[in-house]
Length: 548
Image (spheres, one colour):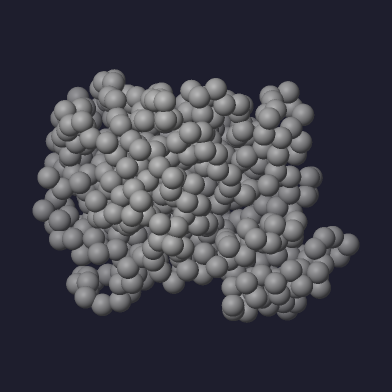
């Protein structure tokens, strides 16, 4: 049975229960950090198992700002190492995964009497471009509103500076990385929660886990355990009596139709009230406005939710920068909120009394702790996930087979370059082909072929999105879909891109799920209710805000 096909998870769990296997490495956490460790470990021949308590990329890694960037602001505050690593990884990912990690030009406006001035900003970008090995920066003082950024506030505007970063679909990047690990022999399971560590005289010997679907308890043995759970890092470390180190910070975003705020670049600017950086950028045919940066004090067991104060904050920002746009709540198609697992500067006293200091002042470097074979990692950036994975494996080396040496961890494995040999339908534009190959690699051709059995025109786009019906079908057949929200919010993003969670497409989605996943009418109704509840609670306007 193919990995991640329907019923594969059920069979694999049965074998985990019946077989007394010791894994070289168990990775807890199915976000980008855990996926990166999983892929690098599997590529080096380790017997590796990955567990995710919810769905793959359910947490921060499907609800980030979608940026694969060098962190220009980190360079501005002296974090040169982080910025240099990030810029170089950004360049690598764009070259290895075109169609998934794509260039995104940025524009920063310079206003009379406001920071940053064009000269200072140019000096910063000179270093930024030097790190990339390529010049992107360009100063623009003519035709700003005619061509570069229509609708931007021109009051006291001196000009704008163009520079470059990259954008991705974060959840699809996670899936691409996990697929690579699967192909190298790893085993990855969603909805399997680590509830406790198993300990011996020598340290960690495994995990006690619970299947979140059946509630069955399972004991797993491993030479070493990697805790890559991001904002949930403290939970597993607490089983060993360790203190809290994570400060969860929430970042929320608004999605509006492109026609309401047409931007071809990411327009970066400072909020008029607190001078925090905010941006509006094109993504998947829509425009995204983000982000906030506040302490997240709600339960981590449910999706983070945008507050009415955050909504007002983002609307104030965008309507100040685009002062004729008049974006209002009724324009918003969807929202999302993610929780950043920031490692607090004061690791011995992470408190909830409001005295932690400004969230934006916290550093974003990753940190690693070794608690006798429980290797925990938190912090860092999506862009540098491969470098973080190598650091984690270096920390785990004392517990791993001797055949794995420090020299084998000198660099991350590149993604397979796919230039020729994939037979794609001629009806697909070159851009659509590039997009499919970037997201699915060699599976792009299989994806089209497999979907023809389940849809008459699988290469048709879903409504106004760039997503093909074939991608949704493939996800059902080959990507461990257990719930409807897995399919519509993470394997595809149509729940974010179409009004009311893509309600208009539910009749077709129902037919596909019933054919591919063997869901009967009762199961479909249960899944639809679950999905609609999630959309209304976590991906829509706050409860206190009513549409007109």
